Length: 140
Length: 70
Image (cartoon, rainbow over all chains, first blue to last red; front, side, top):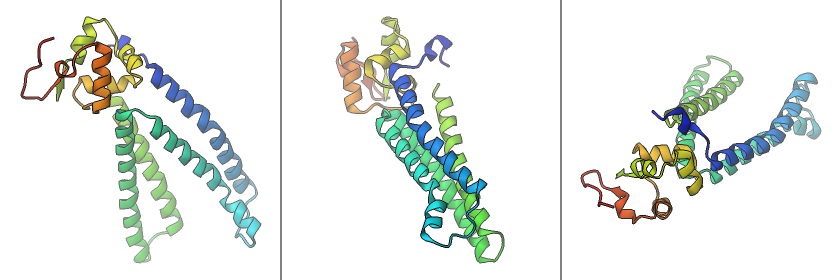
């Protein structure tokens, strides 16, 4: 157990946290706007190229966020990188297992494949975040 | 691998964050090295030795060996 006086963040921690915060805000705002526009004015079933582009518009923010995550991984020190990669592996494993399970159910004609996909993605991301949180807590 | 990081840091009255600042790593990394949950890479081990102004072999040693005295 580390004494509370030792829990001060290092300059490297502060710099990294600040960078993640600053770099994540624009893509999160874009995700909110693009996803919001899809919810507020539902394009329905895309019929032409502009509708397809609109329906896929949140992908720009998602790719931007993925790039931010990648940059954060590159800037992390060696121990943080191991922690992040292990957490990502747990998230990926959870998604692969769920995907397989839902795929089998879908093959048997049980369940809604659209909901299954969303559930798989959501639980995969949750597993990644929980694993990272647990690893970070145990490292304190 | 075992190390004397905690002991040598305490002698200098540095907190984990102080040492982390000097090495440009996170405080968590220092804690993980001290508690044996992470073995540092060779470049980081050399950097630690340089910051503590000690030869690297006096800091780290295999589990079955005793450290070389300072």
